[in-house]
Length: 84
Image 1 (cartoon, rainbow, N blue to C red):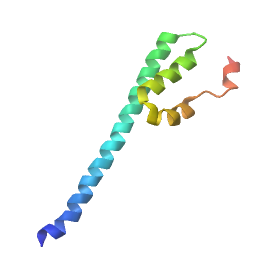
Image 2 (image 1 turned 135 degrees about the vertical axis):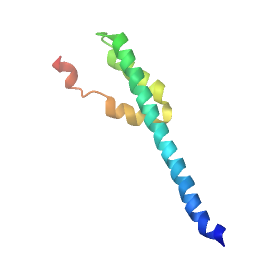
Image 3 (image 1 turned 90 degrees about the vertical axis):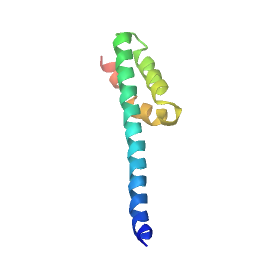
Image 4 (image 1 turned 30 degrees about the vertical axis):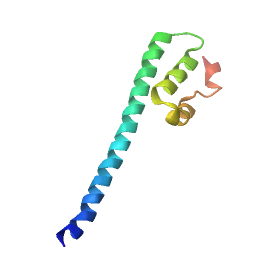
């Protein structure tokens, strides 16, 4: 009887813990990719291909499953390149 009452609460807690750990892992992955990209930006300096080097580093750091979403949001606007 008590098991039937506590099982749904316990399962909800376990599922919440799993969801939180997946979200935390994604956050850490994005943080690590931005750190790596900042490091590569410092190394690349004023190199003409610096933006391509950074995008490649982000794709390498994050992995193929998340790289397209991140790269689409990081890619610079075409007009912004000519404002320098």
